[in-house]
Every structure is written in C-alpha cells, then in structure tokens.
Length: 365
Image 1 (cartoon, one colour):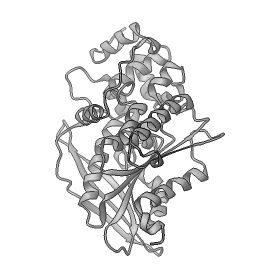
Image 2 (cartoon, one colour):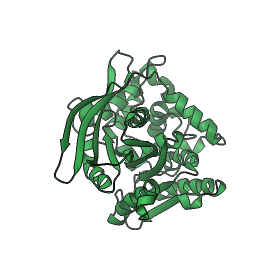
Image 3 (cartoon, one colour):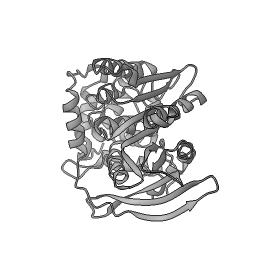
C-alpha cells in the first residue's frame, strides 16, 4: 500500500491508539487556551479593500448590501476575499448593533437572509458571510463539494508545507476580519456586536467568539457538543457524515475499508488540531463566562450527541457561576428534536439579541 508522507504519522497514530486509550491532560487555563487558538490561526492581515457590488432599498424600509472585503493573502499569492450580505434598517439614528449570522455545512449567506430581515426589523443590522469553500467561495461547486475537497487536500498536505485549516478554523479567521470590517462602519456600534451560527456556523461561533471579546452576545445553535466525547462513546458517525467525502478519503489513505473512530481521530488531529482537547467545546465555552450566551440544542440531535453536549453545558454553567453571571447563560434543549431548531428556539434567539443588544429599546425607555 502506498502511504503519502503527509499522513504517514497519522497512520502510525491510527495503528497504535484508540480514542478510549488516549489520555486527557488537564485543560489549559482560559487565558492560555485563548492565546493558543489565536496563535494557531494567526497570519498577516491585509487592508480590507471593501468593494460594494449592490445596494438596494426595498419597500419594507430595509437596505440590502452586497459587498466583499479582503481577509488574507494566501501562500500562492492570491488574496482571499469574503463575500458579505448586509440587511439594515434604511433609516437609523446613530450607530446600531450588528449580528453576524452563520450558515451550516453546504449552505451559503443567502440562506440566512430571513434571519437578517428579522434582525433588521428589530433595529439590528444583520450580516452574513460565505464560509470558506461555500457559496460564492466554492468555485462553482454545489453544496459541500468544494469544502470536502479542501479538507482532503489539507489532510494530504506534507509535513513542512503550508497547511490550510478549512474544517471550521479558517472561517474563524474570516470572522475576526468580519469584526474588523464592522468596526470600520460608521453605522455600527462596535460595542454591540453579536454572533449566531447554525450547525457548522454554530461551531464556528463558539470557536470564534470565545476568544474574541468584541463579540458581546452569542447564540450557538445545534452546535454545542464534545468531539472527544463522541469518539470515546462511539457517537461520531453523524458528525463524520456531514463531511463524508473527506472522511472517506482519509479512510482510503489509511487502508481502512470504511470510516471508523480511528479514522476520525487521525483526520481531526491533522486538520482541526486541538479539537479533542483545549479547543473542544467544553473547554472553549469557559472563555465566554460573563458575556451573554444562549445555547440551543435538541435532545435527539445525532450530530451533537446529548451526552457530549451535557459535558459542555456543565462546563459553561460552572464557568458562569464562578464569574458571578449565571443569568447571562441560557440553555434550551428541545425535547424530541433532532438536528434543527423549533419555532420556540428561533424566537428565543431573536429575543436574546433584543434583550442584550437593545436593552433600552426592549424595555420601552
């Protein structure tokens, strides 16, 4: 069997170690975790170079903007641009709060337009971007095809070569740059920025916002879980199926007849390093303590198994209690709901932003 040197080490790991046998070191402190994650993804910034493509005023009194900004210069010299969709109240007195809304695997920013309109109706500027290898950044590919191929390339990268982190992490960098962009807008109140993500976008929310305190309020929807718990308790299957092609490619490269927990262990350690330890959800949620955080899950969600989710809930509850801010954490687990939101949870998310980003307006003062 031909083994590419880029993942020969991963094969050794696969043969020698099972998830249950890996020993967990104590988690680093929140400040150490924050520093480590920022360092992992750090790269030179480039000027935002904002380019507006279209601005439309509609009959509802909203203004929709289509634009893009530069996020980074890649190793091949190309500038990575982030497509953005903005919906805002057409008439606004002074800077308004803004909320970034993130789509799930295979989605795009346009799919989040209804959220943007609902936010704008409450006086909040709604903002959506295309994640890496999604939407206008997919090179014409449909769904998650470009995303799977990018993850496979990262998996097969050789030691010493520049390696992308398209599986969640690189979009976090784009989101930090989105915050940079929002801070540059005169109609945005930089102290009232929020973020909500659904599924993949929810994972990117707890990764991105946990380490960046510019995000004053966050909602993570159908995304809170524990990657480590899912491996150790044989409940990784649904998560792997969301990126099926990349996981199957890793299995083939490792000489496995099908995707299994060992394949996930090797792939995740390579392309999302730290996701089983310090960057797993139970660890990252500690970094939110003190800032309003709403968590939305379903008790039948196979992508976010409730056993692992409860570990994350407990970690967040302990951190908020220590911070003296238990009222700023809310967890809603919908009974009988799988990987999706019910109407009550959708409404709760909108109300959460109204409560914490528009406290004066919400109270009628």
